[in-house]
Amino acid sequence: MKILSAQDIRTIEQETILKQQLPEAALMERAGRMLYNELQRVFGECACKAEILCGFGNNGGDGLVLARLLQQAGHEVTVYLLEHPTYSQDNLINQKRLEACAVPIIKINKASTLHFTEKSIVIDALFGYGLSRLLDESWAALFGQINATSNRVFAIDIPSGLRADEPTPPDALVIRADRTYTLATVKLPLLLPMYGPLTGDFVILDIGLDADALAEIPTNRLYSTSVAIKKIVKPLTKFSHKGTFGHALIAGGSYGSIGAIVLASRAAFKTGCGLVTSYVPRCGYQIVQTALPEALVKTDPAEQLITTYSMDTAAYKALAIGMGMGTAEASQQALYQLLSDLQEKEQAPKLLLDADALNILSLHQSWLSMLPKCSILTPHPKELQRLIGSWENDFEKLEKTSEWANRYQQIVVIKGANTAIVLPNGEIHFNSTGNPGMATAGAGDVLSGVIASLLAQDYSAADAAILGVYLHGLAGDCAANNIHQKSITATDIIEHLTDAWQHLLP
Image (cartoon, rainbow, N blue to C red):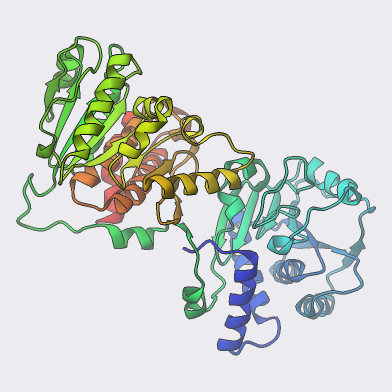
């Protein structure tokens, strides 16, 4: 799914009206009906009270349509409409339709006092995605009342005051929504961590925009949906064997941190890798052999840490390096020697670097030029900051990461909610799966094993990163169907990879 600017969305809406020969306000009617259908799921069989705050533009018009449909379905509705000298044409049409249904419209301004009914749903349809400027302090009293309510607040398209295409400062006036119903396509701020407290969870509603017009709009920001992901997945074939599905080397660990390699290796198997070799310090040999009898195990000469990668890397399709490894001087030099050796090979295995391998690279920035093209780096935000420097906001974080990925021709997986996969060609793919219960020790090690497994199975580096992140998050969602999110462990994610595959490749 494309992530589009406000101007792009307006263009597609106009193209849709022309190509589908829609009458006035028909697209707004679609949007309102989709909103109504979603709220009916929230309300269930109950008759509920909705208090809808409508602006003077098309976002307000969507709210007016919703008000009419809710009232016709037997719900109690109050409409607060911002006073303004000029309303959009479609907004005016729906004001008249609402009046014809005898739904009262209460005119409000910045100084108005709002009286919300206890337990009513408050719906924000004031400004939407078209707002390009910050709201001034004259709106503080009105917005303060909305944000102070104990009622649930739902926003239409994007919370009012939040800008769609550029950063919104932390102290800006923005309505805090518990949920956002975003129309046609997801808006970028809904995917960024810094705006999570303002947007809540979000639901994407399809309002039937013209597919051809949508396809013609270029963008380098994409949201991974199951439809797109299923196109990446390779089918199983009858005469496949373990060699068909590749051989991955999962390397790292140190005294006290061998579990990271066990998790990554087990995840690689569960994702479908044919062969997995775990490479650990000598102290990890018995642990891995006992915990994972399916794996081949090789050990470093040192007892407690990695000191060398002196093996034939040509025997492997993919290498995953760094989990639990530590940053001892000997481990740093071992990584340097590995990168040097890979530079000399015509057919080097695909490389994933995680955890301490990334921390070592941040200490030796000159080594970045040694990375094989399109290696996959999987930092969490702090590890990313050590690599690329600090940022002021999430927009700048994405911009700086994209510049870095292009400069070094690497793939960067920024781990977190809606994990972003940043490709060297400028594309950024945001993930749609996963849940807060996955914020647990070892989940990153599992992700490394999943992606390494896909690399070994001959997925391209970009596809392995995009599919791997989606599959990992989907396994976490499957786990959450059976286990409370507070109780999910990394092992639970691994055990539910089979359920995730069942969704993608039944």
